[in-house]
Image (cartoon, rainbow, N blue to C red; front, side, top):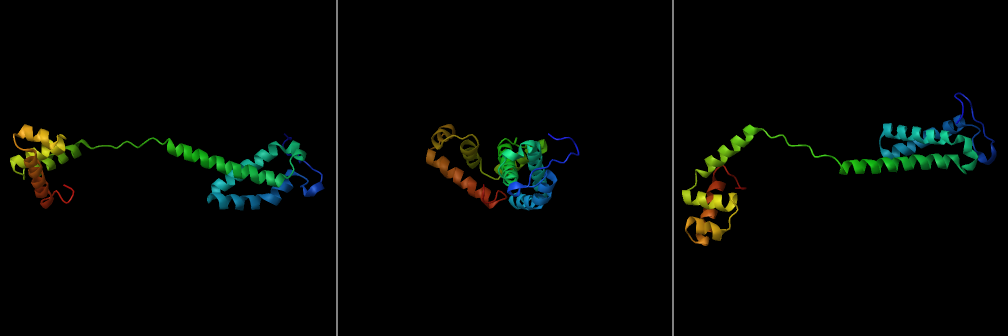
Length: 173
């Protein structure tokens, strides 16, 4: 690394800049425009550009071993952009789900709505719906519990659903 304020000079062979400041002045606008085009974000482009110039500055004492400093600068900046994109994708996969805040009063309201809707049904329709849809019994088991044939359980449940659809239950009941 160079001392603060010290200007590093290079020979002008091969079209290379004489010093870091000259390279910065020659390339910063073009690099910024390229990064802005790639990222679509001015702040991100400026950040990546600064990081690329910093990495080049850290290697400035070995600049003779870098064949094309401008190409190296662009490669470092574009690789930095790819690395940030990959990191963002990984972070997106690890995002913790936002917990759903349930209002306990909503449960009470839902229960009351369900109770009110079920009371519009006949007792047999209500029993068939509760056994099939709420408790998950099959029509065979529900028929044994109710003391009727499985086909009657299915018919009562279908009738009950039809009643709920025609009232406030809507088409999804």
